Length: 290
Length: 275
Image (cartoon, rainbow over all chains, first blue to last red; front, side, top):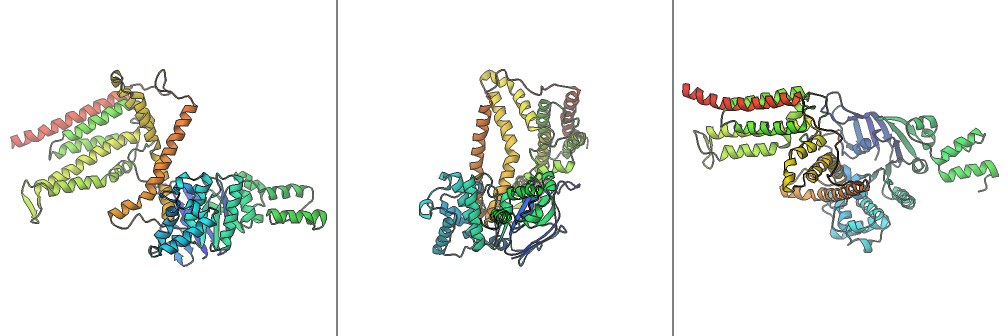
């Protein structure tokens, strides 16, 4: 499913006539099916507001732009948001705060029971087991446990299992790695890559970590003050260091080293992923041998 | 979630904002007493109360719509009270007879009376919270409750609990909003079904909310401990409360309102006697 956003405008506090604070200002963007799309920007630049539009948690107001996701027209009053949310999964910041059920099984099954009430017990069990195993937990060990007796990292895994259990085609994640330790971060991104190869066709990832963007995203957008400044491959968006710094952002490590190397006349011209960067450097120095 | 006006501070620099919180609290209580003093069907007294609210709103530089919004929050309660009055009042002339209930002219008047009375009380109370910051409010209450210290009532702790509770209202609203969205994204449905279904649908919101409140309370207690917070003894205040000429004018106005209401009550009586 393709995501098409046109001239999307949104401001909080509509009640005040002066328009309150504009969170989104004529944002237009198209995200193709199959992309691993990154979104970066300062706190308060409108990223979260934008992604919450993608599954109708914030509705598009009249004459304030349009969003089309696959065959869903979110501007349409008759849009079936439940069906949409089944296809567009959403992982919020600190998703572990949404856990509520008595057992891990019940919590993960929550979304499934909401979206597919006709599903048989056996099928539900299969799907829940698959989701819990996917996020790297031992199903037989955790399924009867209370989610609140798990560790922080495990809680987050359970919460994510609760989102992917419905097999969304588009997965939207708002800073999913905030507060994770390096190993947890790595595991999580590996999981995301795996999901992207399975049923998740499109990933939209909001992150403050430039390395995550340069390493994993096929394309990314920079948000600033409710507008999209640049859209493109990591190579494109990380081309202008001064602009990034003025926005309170930074370069990913690979781009940073490349930039410093270029001052000494070395131009590896990698696509900014770590492995490609090392390959290009090896070509430059030792003729391709790594 | 965003339209909860009741209990929200509207920062502005105005005559009312600069009044002493204690006087404002007492004036609000006096105003509410005034509203309740208005005798049945003497709507002129209500007009006086409304005029008072209007004057206060204008001098406080608060948009009147913002004040009116507070009624929205308890609309359900108002309508319920009005309906009860309407249906269960059998005095007076019958206007509509539906065999099992009779709607009478007195019932109708009573319902209108109740609506106006509750609305006026809420308007006054929301004016207090709109023009007084939570901190000032808590300080004011603490100061007003001071005499209770002599019967060993922990006044300071009580005020602290109150100001913390007030402080966390917006935080909890934000949190609720976030959790509702997260559960909606997982297909939770809060808008359809009968009342039991809807109540049950709230469980996935209430439990995370409760847990996060406990977590916050723990964190806050630790943070206060880390800064060596200890009760009331020898604690000074950042802002000392002082009575000024504004408070005198405010007091006179409220006193005038009450005299006016009592006078208007009797005015009716005099009018009926004269006729």
